[in-house]
Image 1 (cartoon, rainbow, N blue to C red):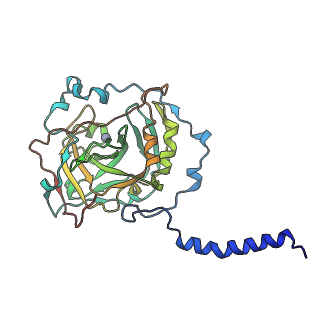
Image 2 (image 1 turned 120 degrees about the horizontal axis):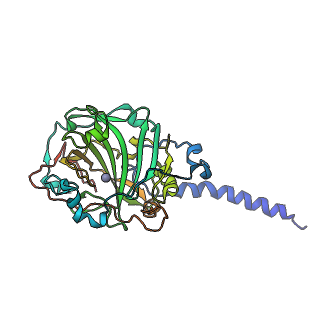
Length: 329
Ligand SMILES: [Zn+2]
């Protein structure tokens, strides 16, 4: 008797059903270092999949090209004298030369853990910046900043044209492909502009990234929108798309801290730097998106390397709260 074709099909389906759980059991999936990946928090799919047509960057009407470029950083001091002072940033940090001070700590306020309410993403021709425009302000304090309160104002990135360069700070001779700066100003001043030239005016959290084969899901909304500000002087709303705490490493109590400066003109020496020792992963594909950003409105010239070379440490001391129990990198 001839078997119906459906009979063969049903046998195949039974075999597939039998094998499937076995395959699932032995499948290992992408390798993720659980220590480095922040705790998962679902990203609102509505926000991630927001219709691209509504997110096309609009031109910044008052945008002017920056009056400096990283290609001529050796000449910055001619126009911005502070760039030649003795407490400049970034620096190269050698971990064996760092002073340990167990009383140092950093304390994050509650709004670090919630969606950034009102924000704008813009390409200013030298970097991509996310500026806080209002709402519940993320703040931090702690003995590392003399227990003053520092308010989040903006964050931006420094990257290189390939994986061997990009970060501004160099740790034990290693330069990383991307460095994120979260810029805060002291609450005792009314604005970033007022604080920027004061000795205790600013504190910047620096996050160093290491390339990973898997994408970092917490960077996805940001990476997605880079395409909308690819040309310089574009700006888009960036409301409720990111939680700052998710961009920090898991362990925020391991850091280096020192007195330094803005790493771009006018190079004011007003920054208490806090550089986290633990690296945050970024997918190789995500990293590439930064390298597509351009420095002109016509989208012709890549921003390229927007990091400043390390500056002399001079008499400064780099401190850390504790020696890590084991190697971080
Ligand atoms: Zn910076």
